[in-house]
Image 1 (cartoon, each protein chain N blue to C red):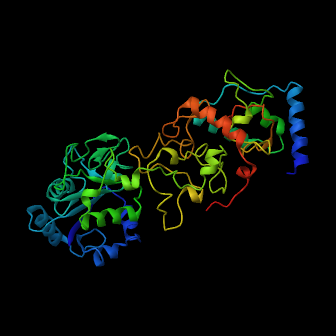
Image 2 (cartoon, each protein chain N blue to C red):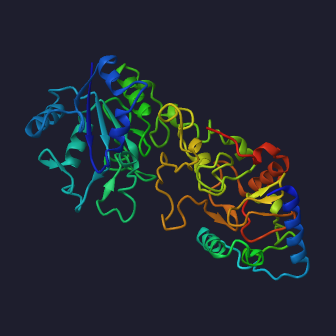
Image 3 (cartoon, chains in turn green, orange):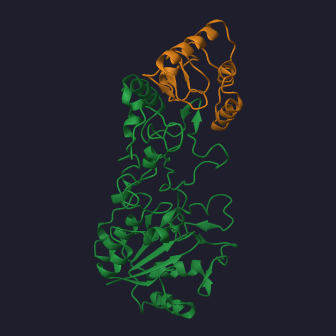
Length: 320
Length: 104
């Protein structure tokens, strides 16, 4: 039996919606097959008012063992660091987060808002939002760079906008079944099992990437979305094309560019009209090249790839 | 469009440029916003106004600039069809041509 508590800060509930759609395992499987006791969840908890408060206080005091504390959304610290803009159960949510994080064996941040601040923390960030242990790429976040939960792990970050439901449930199951120590995290505290490979891994358009044939509009069944439509698949760590959404698709499979939502910078660039879904270039060369590729090598590779491109690469293929 | 038609149109474009058609090769759109403005300008042109489209997009019938940029390496160029696949242009081209919508 592992006790799980889920709270929500500055968020749209997108990760809750995602979590409730989990399939491998499902949210119900967590309870029935893996012995997880959901103490409270914003969309599932039946307690209200003082009864919720009592659960939280009991977790903090140790009366209830808090094995997994999941936080969704940003930690809102406005105004002036008080956190009063986001009150919950009679006090600032940030105070609950601070004390529950100290009490928990494992702390899991779900979604971009909880991990790096996501959209709410984008400048000018009026709610003074922070991620649990990061603000964008900057280490620290609300809990501070040195924070470690009782397990010895920092906050386990499961980013995404939203996070894929199975990433959430599989990490929770790993913890609940005593395999929490096996969770290896990268420099941004993302579980390596999910975030070591790139979105491009498993993309059905990889041949078009190799032969430098570009898609020019959304939904086209041919061409790579990187060259023109701003796809961030070659530089984004995620398994979106390995662990498919709804078990059958992904953004790139549907002809939609990867937005890079599992990386700390999301959302990217200045978001001004004309800059979204467009590959940013300097003199016709992409500003952001696939990770590990330099400009000179990229240009040489492009010339060679174009010369070698087979005729089928130009055809309208059904790639889903 | 059939291959014969594409060849005929390619020849027509080649002749226009060989006859000295002056196109706007500069300024090269250095930012994506400038690139978008050029695309918007192209979209506003009548589809049948080939000459205006060539002028706005800055076509030349030889490689361009210190890096000798050319259609052959451009992202929009379809090698086997000898075709510019940028929706706002969508014209047959030769591999050694260039225009200021070039991207790699």
